[in-house]
Length: 378
Image (cartoon, rainbow, N blue to C red; front, side, top):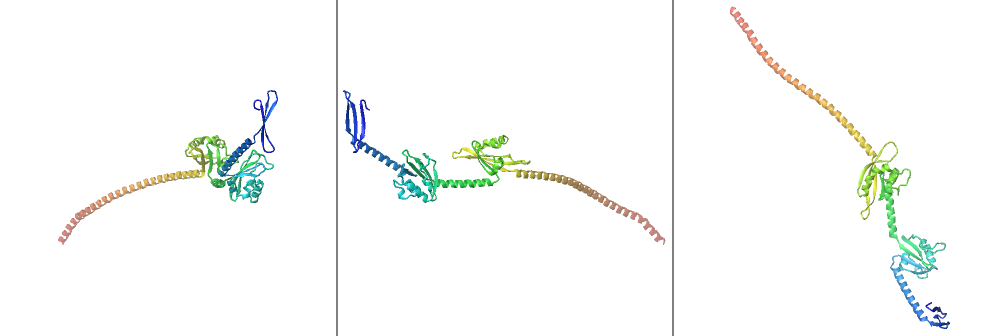
């Protein structure tokens, strides 16, 4: 309705278009004007077809430039369009790449080659709810694909196929590496754990779990304070803060355990940094050093016993040395006295010899005189 006019457009059976305009006259009647607008409508149709063709060409060019395989199916599950990558990735025959190919035939083809999941991306299948679902991962001839289906407004759907072989191989390698690390971590007797920036456990090995959760209490996701308790957490807090500040710290700590014997551990906190060199957590390594402590105590006791024995032996040797020194001094004194006695004896012997010589001389003189007298008398 335009002012006092009313207009209608009619499509005639012979393909022509007519515009009817009704106007009220001054007398109160109605004047109808019939205008043939077939040429205008044809021009509009051509413009629409041209624009649609351009959009279709742009869409096809966009699809062809994509690295993923894309196929569009109508509400009758017939292929409307697909890019070249769709056929290359899925190794499809030419009949399944052409427009109008049946999605059911595509499913049967995948069933026959042992990859049925490649044909389950339709979000409008019988008995299924409308709406796009999460992508699924499918293997085909040693290659992996991520398959996803999304509905179209007109009742059709779009399927997309992304090759993720490299990602799957990397994931498998990472999983294998993680399993190996877990096997290694669980095999070593050292207690190993990883704690994030919020002081929550993200990984613990079997030895750590046996030490701090012997009854199977969950550890992952729990805070250090919740697992250790205030009595054990408080002494460790300064070392935790230093580790989160980026320093590697070591310290001794008591270990949990049963029995009367006290057990000891040697802990090392190693900070973990991301690619921006930010500390996002730290690794904990705790070694049981109870046996080493026991050996140290035994060695210390042995050293003390050895020192005691050395002291006793030293004292005994000192006493023997003193006795020997006294004996040596005594022998030296005796030797000096013997030398003096010998000297005196020699001196006395000389005196005796001289005395005897003098005495013999004094005694022989009268005898010689008497002998002379006797000889004279004779």
